[in-house]
Amino acid sequence: MSDFTLSDLETIVATRAQASPDESWTAKLVAHGQAKAAKKLGEEAVETVIAAISNDRANLVAESADLIYHLMVVLKIADIPLQDVMDELERRTSQSGLQEKASR
Image 1 (cartoon, rainbow, N blue to C red):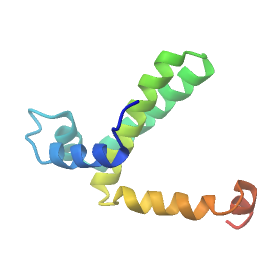
Image 2 (tube, rainbow, N blue to C red):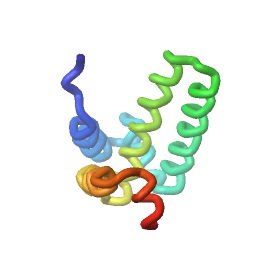
Image 3 (cartoon, rainbow, N blue to C red):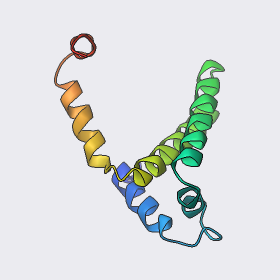
Image 4 (cartoon, rainbow, N blue to C red):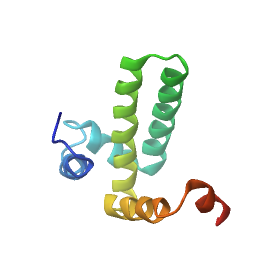
């Protein structure tokens, strides 16, 4: 099992965002702005859903990785630290999903 974490990915995205857009896909997405990055995130979400519906395990793993990566880029552009998302997940999981949804 890998020791790689979402925090590791966040650090890599932040570093690559500072590179030249000619040398880094991350930097290219950041340079094109939130609309382009969010569109790519949406495309990856659709591809992930298709892989899940198709029961294509290998593709679901690959598309899930793409989805998480593009989410991290969108968060980076929005200047939202991963910890903010983790804090929200922690808050939500302190109660059942049904209770949390009813409280919205």
